[in-house]
Length: 456
Image 1 (cartoon, rainbow, N blue to C red):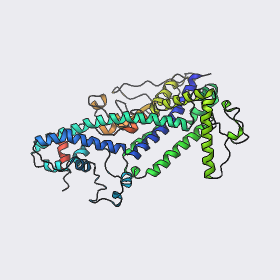
Image 2 (image 1 turned 180 degrees about the horizontal axis):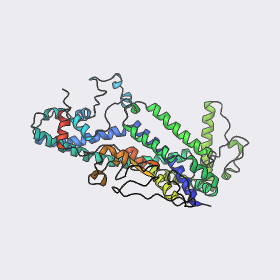
Image 3 (image 1 turned 120 degrees about the vertical axis):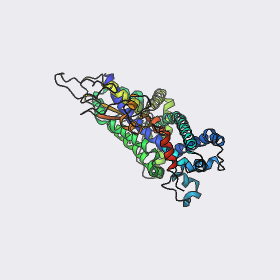
Image 4 (image 1 turned 180 degrees about the vertical axis):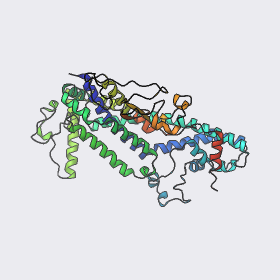
């Protein structure tokens, strides 16, 4: 048994399943409008606790309500035509086709604030006073945004783990059996490693995260659901096609056509009447499904292997819930210990090394480019923007470049593979509000954004 290579293949399988979980979690966020709801709550708290008291102190009288302020801040000028659309009278349709902002940069917040009643009345004040207030409002917007993002991450992590458990149960991912089969079958391990495109899966998960604020995506919930189901079906079939012990053919479902020998030894002795037969109509299919689930449930508690299966499914859910970035790091770490492994996360072979490959050394941030052929990991997502005082900030990296370069990461090495990795866990990255930091905007910049947003 080679447990090291088995762990490598196991990590690749977990990356596939974690990516599927990420897609499902992001769909649930869109369906439940969690980002929109949290953004509305953020703006409400921001106005009542930070903006309104300062306006009162500055003797700026505002008669509009908090709800009016939130609506004006979230109003999307690209879709607002001065009147409500026809579907506005139906709450369900209004939720599905909502075109309001779910995220704003600091500059966008200032521009939107200028269109509120508070912003319009604030114009009557002197420039110095307006500049000072806008600067304070911007700072508070970022501070509240960071707090809201942290809360959203923690809640999304819980949701991600719940989805991971359901995925493990739905696809029958027996973690213990999966690892034991990989440890005993070297050919299967090689097939899995060669078949799983880790970089492609990471890109797919990141694209799902980046589409969180896409207006067209919010208006296509049905298409999103179809895409999620298609992803689950596609990835589960691809894993089963590799010969992995995944699916309803294994204990406790023991599903097979009549006359076929069970593929799982734990299914020996299951009567043929329990095996699935072809259902020609939807009623028959539902009957077969209910019968299969009922028999599987009874089998779990009547056979000695049942409790072990329950523990293994729970373990699989927890492992999937760790997220694709965790398993990607595990994959690379294990690959570094396997001599001669040819993978996208290993450097190119060097002459005179007897076929051995070694990890390419990383250059410290700010000390030159990486050597040719080195693996370049690009940290993507909203958390990748360089913070003030970091090496990246010292080199003048703009906030918007964070998604392409990361914290203190040098440009890609020539000839080396480039792998995109979310800055936080997959589930956490899928959950962030993606609010930009001030990014060096001066008070003059903020005032100009406020002053030039007068569309009256």
